Amino acid sequence: MGDKNHLLYVVTIHAIFALLHFIVSDAVETLARAVGRQERWQLLRNNTGVVAMHMALTHENTVIIFDQTEAGPSQYRLHERYNGRRCSTRSRADLKDGACYAHSVEYYIHGNNLRPLRFVSDPWCSSGSFLSNGTLLQVGGHGRGSQRIRYFRPCRDHLCNWQQSKRSLSDNRWYASNLLLPQHDRVIVVGGRNAYSYEFIPKLHTKDRSFNLPFLHDTHDEDGGGNNLYPFLHLSSDGNLFIFANRDSILFNYQRNRVVKTFPRIPGGGSRSYPSSGSSVILPLDHQDRFQKVEVMVCGGAASGAYEAAARGRFLPALSSCGRMVITGNNHIWKMENMPGPRTMHDMLILPTGHILIINGARRGCAGWQNAATPSLRPYLYNPKKSRGQRFTVLKATRIARMYHSSALLLPDGRVLVAGGNPYNTYTFSNVAYPTELRLQAFVPDYMDRQFNDLRPGNVTIEYEGHSSGVAYGTAFTIHFWLGRRPSKDVEYSVYAPPFTTHSISMNQRLLKLRCRHTTRDGGGSMSAVLEAPPSPNVAPPGYYLLTVVNNGIPSLSQWIRFIPA
Ligand SMILES: *[C@@H]1O[C@H](CO)[C@@H](O)[C@H](O)[C@H]1NC(C)=O
Ligand SMILES: *[C@@H]1O[C@H](CO)[C@@H](O)[C@H](O)[C@H]1NC(C)=O
Ligand SMILES: *[C@@H]1O[C@H](CO)[C@@H](O)[C@H](O)[C@H]1NC(C)=O
Image (cartoon, rainbow, N blue to C red; front, side, top):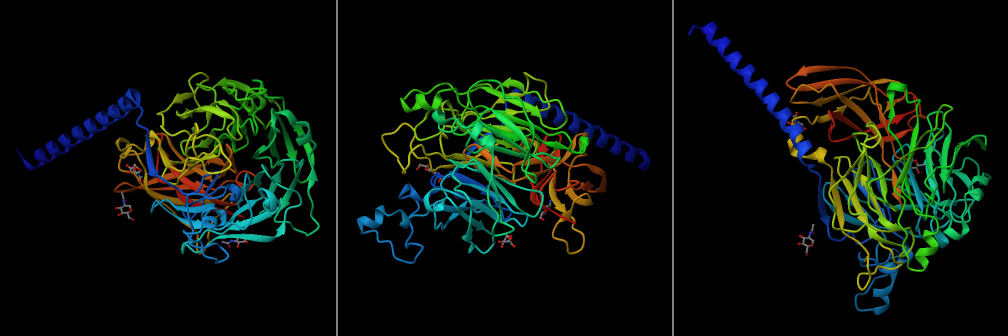
């Protein structure tokens, strides 16, 4: 064989093998997806020490976990109280003293370890938001904590802790909701038990007060335990605030204290808000309509009378229905569909793929101490893009019940952290149906399976202009990543605002699909993509987001990106 022929021969053989490899691996993928889902559950730790009533992911890749301080001893013993007084293991009084135990911890994702944090007042059933610089602002709670404002400024040196502000809220906020607003790095705090009002923090002037919100009176259900607590808040891209409580919702101009729209009542009976504890998300916002179409989704909740029935030891089947409604434009109809089963006290999380994960909770009863039975062990996955009737998939069951006071959140590596559960007002481990749950798990979605590794974009990096610490609204920026195979036709670039999660509500959670102007393949699998930052803070309030490259449904590890005002 001549040299030329030999070369041709080698090239042809290579081409045939490459083609074969391509066909076979595509077929394997399709098969794997058709045959069986590959999602998994991981047990990360047997004991977090503290019930994960509230959780939030910081941009330092740690998770802040906290409970209430009035629950007495947790399972995280301290050597000394925060005021420095020693905690003796020989003193019975000290063993029972809640001050000798942690009620908040910081969890390090990479090390899978914990350290205790300090609270000086009780943050029981409170709310929170990240400010644009990544500091967690947390408000309210119970007793002396009910008007407190606290900050947690994430750090690398493991020395940061909760700081309590000297300023206080105007009203008591217990079971209130928070949302970071587009302007002035301020948060709106809405509702709470016996608080039919809203207010803004940090306050611009010391005389700033709270504002009455009649909608919260109208939606209050005294016999049902409120049913309008922890209202669902979503920021619409027109700058107005969507507020949902019980079964009703409004579009609210918070700058003028004016109801812009009253939406139709969601069908399906029962109630959706705490203690009925349905859950809600704003569906992914998309550059294809310039982020103008905003659609919210509400799922599950409790039957009418569930709260009263639970007090008598009867647990009514939860609601199975979900409603979707477009809140922009002029045509507002709840489009209803059913989950594969009834569900209350679940969390709804937006995955980097734009699918919605419905996880945790129970099939009967409602929220509150010992108010529920029959845990929902199987997560549901919802694909909003499929046609109705085909959107839900039932996923692999866990063996750990996640009842009242459990929570879940998305991690930067694509897993979902699942923790908590405690239907009692102290830590209770024996002779009860659903003991206090301190095991920490990760739900590992099927997109993380190794079989998809050759589709998975790797080493995502973000190029910042000069010394800038963020990307300005409406500007183009470049990212680099690695992809072994040629990219599929379907590559998406999503950014995700990490929520503050408690009581089935993930405050500030939103996902945007960014526009890609063009991509270049730099050789050796290196890729560059020029992306467009969101056009304005109304679409994505300033702060840290997780940026993910999703190739044919397979996400990269996420990288933190910060959007800042120009
Ligand atoms: C949790 O405890 C069980 C039983 O003692 C043990 O087998 C397991 O290895 C522990 N898991 C972790 C993650 O510590
Ligand atoms: C972020 O802003 C808050 C409020 O102004 C401030 O208390 C905090 O120290 C800032 N955090 C950082 C990391 O600069
Ligand atoms: C990704 O980055 C790591 C470390 O920065 C490097 O070791 C690895 O080779 C890179 N992988 C690819 C596929 O470029």
